[in-house]
Length: 478
Ligand SMILES: Cc1cc2nc3c(=O)[nH]c(=O)nc-3n(C[C@H](O)[C@H](O)[C@H](O)COP(=O)(O)OP(=O)(O)OC[C@H]3O[C@@H](n4cnc5c(N)ncnc54)[C@H](O)[C@@H]3O)c2cc1C
Image 1 (cartoon, rainbow, N blue to C red):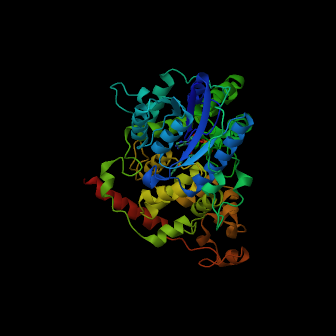
Image 2 (cartoon, helix red, strand yellow):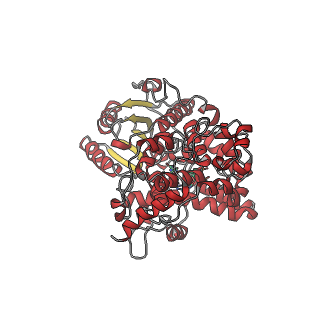
Image 3 (cartoon, protein in one colour):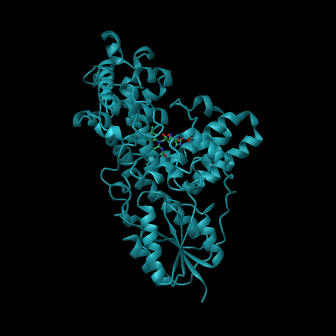
């Protein structure tokens, strides 16, 4: 009887550079499977935008596999039961997968390994999500890093990531195996379809990920170093949802970027900056792996005593992009309308929520979790704690972004703000980021009635800043 293996797809929805799939294929016939386990992750089960990306990634993967004559089996249920059952159904001797790092992943992999072993089936787990496994990067005393710069330096001293693997030749066991239909999973929003139009902006899947990387390295990376903070310009890669769902591997990104450096040494510093952001992704995973409480609890324990507010009206105004601060509102509306927000603006809106509105970073983390296409447990928690001041290697709490100055500095032309807050489109640049300072005549000429067509600022910057510093002061005494 030929050797049959299952390949269990998780957050690695691609065919190339997938060490587990390559290993499975080298052993004989492979049956690929994706399990929809709606209980997995508990409160961190997939948000709405992530479900949209998952649907389209699975659809693409299924078509890519079908083109090779291989099915993708879809099953719903508890992961352990579903995999054990399917392995028995097809007489699989091995189950292959990529390793994951969420707080629940190691336990799931352990219990699955034990359950399969009882049936004489082995679980074979491979890397596939990171450049370096979290245990392989440690301080001189063997402890996890808590500061980015030495972490990334240590990554640079580790053996370089292996060359990406090609798509392996795949054969599949004979006979039809029952699979559910992707459409029946209803991962896409129905009524209302808040994602309408997203397919004109995004094309999930492996081929598009690779194209996005190539285009970025050919046309935009030279602007990355100096232009990555300008949200109206296409100077960043927008690879984050592809990386989140494994449509592309960080090794593929790393090697392509290094090759680009060899061909165009003039772009080296921009490419190094870009790679260091891939390094931040690694760092976030390193932290999540070693400090699994990170999505729920402050890294700095003092922040457990921070006097957070609980004003639901303020939270709603922030979520809906109606705070009266144009750059904040632009970011929140970009998020709602596209499932994405530029990194600079993520920092501005996160600072505004935690410092101007004194609302808990977990409120922001949860909203991002639901709305971001790239919602990632490690990077999201790390980003929120970094901005909120409670994280490892965090921005100091007393550094409070002034949303007017941030708008004037990073959206000087107003292109970004005017795109997402069209009711301010006719306001002259001078007042775009502070419409409340515009004379009545200019507001009238620009068709703006503050308090009606666009809100008054929800808080006064100076007063809010002082309140935040006072709140922070209560921690100093601890
Ligand atoms: C409050 C907050 C929440 C965030 N939540 C997420 C999240 O849920 N998922 C997510 O992928 N990123 C998150 N980020 C990080 C960052 O904003 C996005 O990765 C970036 O904007 C994605 O755009 P890009 O692909 O064009 O990035 P590029 O600038 O082109 O960077 C390349 C890749 O590096 C990684 N990267 C870049 N910056 C960071 C960073 N600061 N931290 C971790 N990885 C980074 C991403 O994978 C990104 O695709 C968050 C940042 C903040 C401040």
